[in-house]
Amino acid sequence: MPIHNTDIADIFNKLANLLEIKEANQFRVRAYRNAASTISSLSKSAADMIEDSEDLTQLPGIGEDLAGKIEEIVKTGSLAQLTEIEKDVPANLDELMDIPGLGAKRARKLYEELGITSLDELKKAAESGKISEIEGFGQKTEENILEELKHGGEGEKRIQISVAEEYVIPLIDYLQDMDGVNQVEVAGSYRRRKETVGDLDILVTGDTHNRIIEYFIEYDEVDEVASKGETRSSIVLNSGIQVDLRAVSQGSYGAALLYFTGSKSHNVKLRNMAIDRDLKINEYGVFKDKERIVGKTEKEIYEILDLSYIDPELRENRDEVEASQKGELPDLVTLEDIRGDLQCHTKASDGHASLREMVEAAKEKGYEYLAITDHSPLVAVANGLDADGLAEQIDKIDELNSKINDFLILKSIEVDILEDGSLDLGDDILERLDLTICSIHSKFNLTEEKQTERIIKAMDNPNFNILAHPTGRRIGKRRPYEVNMERLMEAALERGCFLEVNAHPERLDLNDVYCKLAKEIGLKIPISTDAHRKDELENIKFGVWQARRGWLEKDDVLNTRNWGDLKNLLKRS
Image (cartoon, rainbow, N blue to C red; front, side, top):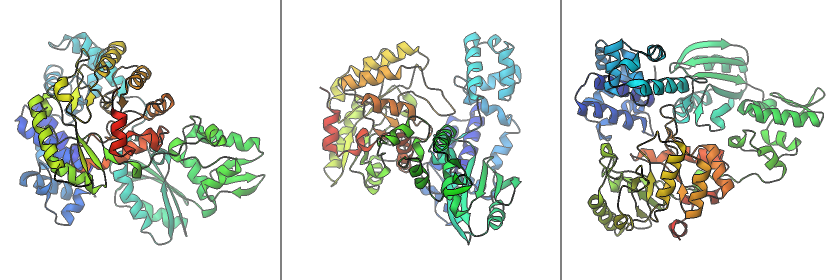
């Protein structure tokens, strides 16, 4: 059974959680968490690296022991050490740690006091009032647990688009390797680049449909064949992801791609437009009476409805059809438009690569500049820099800038916004920087009014340039804090500040709706990776996808500019 990087990271994270619950040595716990992060950020498969006899100990934080464990997972699909620990600690107990406010100590206490080993048991205990009776918890904690459980249980199970991509790419390669296959395309929410994906929908054209179906269900990651027909089949992968494949004729390919890409509300709008023209549109084509007029390409279907082609990311029934009718569709930003990254971290705080290594990785991407934004002191777990530490880093950057050509390292910091709206470092050191990234890592539970005022007060500081991950969310793990986003954007526009699209696939913050709001207000947006490793610079594509869903064009994005133009935009009046 093929093992993906996500599988390895999941095992290491679970091992770290259970060890922490057992009160194991914190260095061991941290080592496994770092290993999980390293593996999940790799741009290539760890399994392929092992097959190619590559030295895993060259990866950041991976020594001989961890390399051996990675190889064990790849070859066996499991880790003996985790299996052994699960004999002492219930395997599902680590799920409790996904609830904000429930760390390892509280998870262990819930287990010891109430025998809670799962989220279902946690919910029952909270609903019966038992949790508030435990010393150190209280009624407020119990209410928060219930709220988080309610939020986490809503809707279908979805995965981050980055995880979906990890399974999509090898499956597409597999299908394209079949003789007689012409086109393979993933449709649905994946093609629309939504931040999370449910089932995967794949369309294939080729010579013999039944052969394509047989080949599809023989894929080596299939756990279950849910259905099988002459032109369509559904499988469930070992990961639990369902994949639906449809083999379609060349004449219907465009119609099927349009139909299965969605969204449903976009498709309904197109169908109604077709009805108004005495036409019928479905997954097989556009029909006049019983005659198919078009269907080979999406473009010709849009044209017959007097529309220009609408990019998949825009197909959410958010006025894209009206914009197409008026000739006002945006020319969406592309990955090639990005000229630099405005947030990344090094070993000086919680990063896993040196300053020079991050710079070399950025240069290899063809960037013109890179902002080094290590943390400020408040984030103690990130080994944040104080004023002296930042001054030392400024000197190192100046020295390195003097030695490299056609590239600029930008002096910066990710400085925390304190509860009262002040910044975690003084103006005297911040004034020496090229730009300042400001963010919230504490006091997430303030009211909307207080959180909004806190950030706006921070924006009043003339050294404030960019608000990082503006809502603080972590997809599937932490809800956004309460904030009035329209007020924030208007305040930023008035003061010459900006709000970031954080491209980390667990954040993608701002979301697409807020990106569109920023465009409507006239606020330009930087797209940054928040990279803590060299490979994480590749996450920029997820931020670009998010920006495209928010209708952003090249001019709407700060870091599509050269440094001279960007520097002028960053100047506070």
